[in-house]
Picture: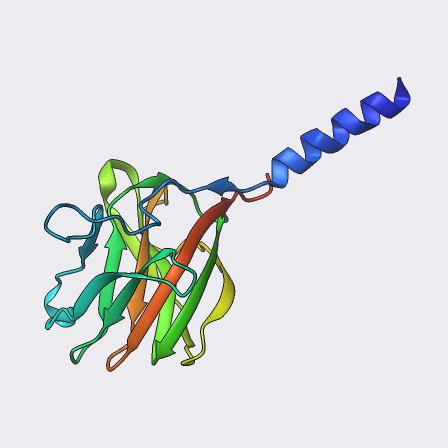
Length: 176
């Protein structure tokens, strides 16, 4: 009985700290015109020209994406909103290669989809494909709406040519 209770308690505790996989078009599926479904450019004036994005196959035959900058940072995001709040973390895993810098981050929103802030820390990419794991803690910013949801954002720095495959994102809920 004690052993069974101990196993149940362990399962409950493990569940408290397990992440929630974000459901999005991580395979970069395309429509009949070759446009990647659910993904969009951030078309703010500061990011124009927008750059080029195309669906590709990774080295192991898996679907991926190639982001090429044509002069400015390229902000490309998945418009599938997911619940998240300040103190939660986003754990990104992927295989990346190319040149330049990449940021894996998000745009975060308050109630009624009021924009709160975006955060996307950059890291350097090499030509050789490498698996990466990056964790981003969502920290509330002073004077901004309380975060209740987010969107995944991929940002390629100016002059970058980056390939990403096997992208996965998990929300690690803050400890309460």
